Length: 130
Image 1 (tube, helix red, strand yellow):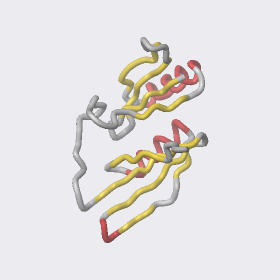
Image 2: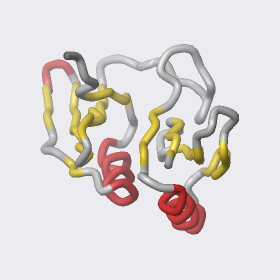
Image 3: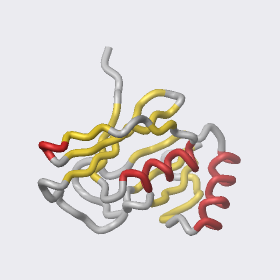
Image 4: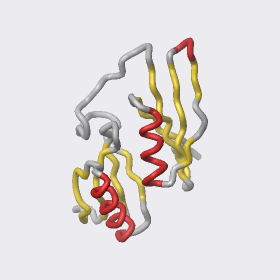
């Protein structure tokens, strides 16, 4: 049976992104992997409930850039379940105080979800869901 093992993000600052996911979502930061010949470094951040995020940086190519928070074709957001509406509300308060970009919510969506949308430090859209 298939399951999502991890997703990958190209970033400019691996340590900054890893610290963000560790601080706000209790992710565990894995060891740094480096392939000098390919100009590639990465770390995984792992969540207690399963899938991981591979945070990657390259010096030998230029991944396509897009506007922070852009709704674009392809992978457009990552949704993280926080378990309850109260948990979403509480984290949004903390994030607002810390200056994290809040794009939308918290709110109840037309299809019944309770969510807020934020941007991580590299401008990736993250849905925080109950």
